[in-house]
Structures are given as structure tokens and as C-alpha cells.
Length: 433
Image (cartoon, rainbow, N blue to C red; front, side, top):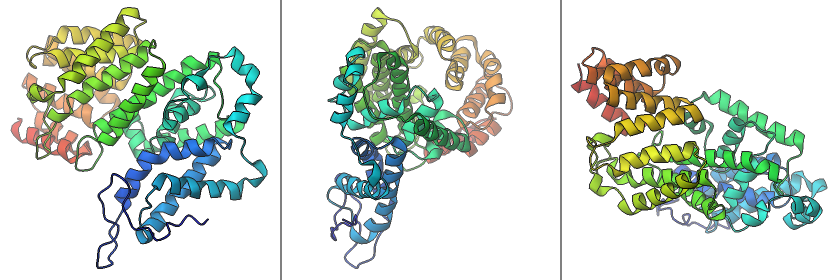
């Protein structure tokens, strides 16, 4: 088997791109390959991991399969079963490179660790029906890794995201993310990490990393760096689907429930975030009649249930903030004092730049734009190249009647990656003093 497609010239399921037209002129199918990889990366990696090979070898093999796809599919066509094609090509790489370490099946691993399973929470049994991608997330959340490294590795391995996109979600430089991924793979190699049962002592930390990663996948999909659409529904939908499965497996885990509620609440506003022409619509001006009220009602019920049993964690608090927005009849009727109080609780539990930004904006709504500017000042000094921070600065300057709002909006537009955001910010710049 050489990884070829037997001259199949069809597009991938769910993709409308044409690989070759009647005149024999091949079109660029890079976007098709990217979409297929994003959808299938986790499944391919999971299939390879079941062989018993180390994560770093499996990821290298999967990446080589992706390279082979970009080289062969433009000429041979996208296969009818892209996942199977990628798995076959990657498997051959593993066979060629690791014949001396022929894979042990997952059942053999479970038998070898039967005694350990008896002492552990049967995590693998509880997630046995879960999606392969979610099981890979659990594997990548290894206790030997720092949380930041585990998140970066799983975003690369499972979601198939580029280093640049991961860096944008983590608010850190791309070289830092690349180093984290490299160190994570090296650490797993040194520790001999394998696909297997999870001891009870490791469950809380691994689950925390899994939730954080799912949230980042959703966040990255909610506002793309580029592309025609502001929201990447393939990413947000995948994050919601995986979180739904995790919630069904662990229905009494309050933070997982809170995360699901948060995603549903944010996703419910998607239809109102842009016009038909793709122009950005800020929250203040969105038509709330187009919000998905069924999803909002379900999220509120989930949130009320998990808040009642506690303990309260960061995702529950973020969901509570989103619920205040979602249940307000209008922007003017938003309970900003409650939002500010929730941000205060969130800052104590999980201080980070995104929380500080939200708290500064809420401060401006409750105590006036000058107070908001004062709260934003440390963040502005620490993250001058974040377009969201610059946009908040511009908004507060504009609201306070201070000079420099137009310049701040223009700087935010320069830093923004998505065309819809840049267009909106430049429109505000033109209308500001």
C-alpha cells in the first residue's frame, strides 16, 4: 500500500470544493485538505494510539500523512474515505519506522494493568463510548505536563490547529507555543506515557486540562483569525459536541456542566453577531430576537443545577456572566452590577488577561468610563498588541469624551486579524474624535 487514492476524483464528504475541472486544470484544494484534517485529526491520532505506539511517534506519522495528502490529493483527488486514507498512510509510516516495537492492542494494555484498574476510577470504561478525539484529549492531559503545555499539545494534536492559532487563543507568542509543544512531546517520551487507564489521583488535573482545551477550541472558533466567516462553526460545533459527551459521562461534574452552559449561551448569539453581508454587529446593537432562546433556556437550567450543588468554579462563573447578558431584555437593561460582582469572584479564582479585560469593561459600565480606563491601564501596558484591549481602550476613551479614541480604534483595527473586525473598528475610528 502506497497511500494513493486509486485515481478517485471525488470531493471529501461534506466539502463542495472541486478538485479538477473538465478542462483538466487543477484547482487549489488546500482549503479542502485543511477542513478534512481539522475534522479527522483526532480520529486519525486515536486510531494510531490504539496500536500502542507512543504519542510522539503517532503524531509524527499523522503529520506525514497530512503532508502526503497535500502532495497527492491535488492530482489524484480527495478519497471517498479521507479518514481511512490518512490512517492507512500514517500506519504504514509506523510499521516502517517501528517494526521492532510492534503495537500492543488496547485490550492487552488493560489486561497488563488489571490490578491498577481495580484501584482507579474506571475512566476508560466511563469514556469508552466517547468520541476518539475526547479520549486523545484525556491522554494528552498527562500529569507530567504543565497545564499550558498540555493545552498547547492537545490543541495541536486533536484540533489540528496551527501554532499561530493556538498562540492567539493563549494570548502568547507563537515561538512560546512551539517550545511548549516540543517540550511536551519530549516530556512524554521521557516518561514513557502510553494510552491506558487513568489512576484516580490524576483524574482532577486531567479533567481540568481537558475542559480548558475544549474551551479554547470553542473560543478560537468563535472568532476566527481570518476567512470569510467570523465564526468557524466546525470548531465551535466540535467543541460543543465533545463537551456534551463529557457532560453525559460525568453529569455530576459541576465545572463540565458550567462549561457546556457557557458554550451554549455564547453560541446562541451567533446569528446576531454579523449582518447578511458579514459586517460585525456589537452586542449593544444585536437583534436579540434572533438569539437561540431554546439553547439559552437549556443553558440556564444547566447552570442553575450545577450552581446549586457547588463548588463554584471559573467556567460556572463565566457561564453566569453570559447568562446575565442572554436573559436581559435589552443591552440597556443588562444587570452590569451583577456582572461586575461575578467578575470579581472570577478574578479571585482564575486571574488572567481575558478576565481582567471583561472586568475593566464592566467597571466602565457600572462606575463610568473614567473608572473603566483606570481599570484597563495595567492590561494596556502588559498587552499593547492585543486588538481587544486596544478596542476596549478606544471605546472607553470615546465614552469618556477623551481625545485619542480614533487613533486607538485605528490601532485596534491594525492589530485585528479578521476582516469583519477590522472593518468595524475602522468605521468606529472614522466616527470618533
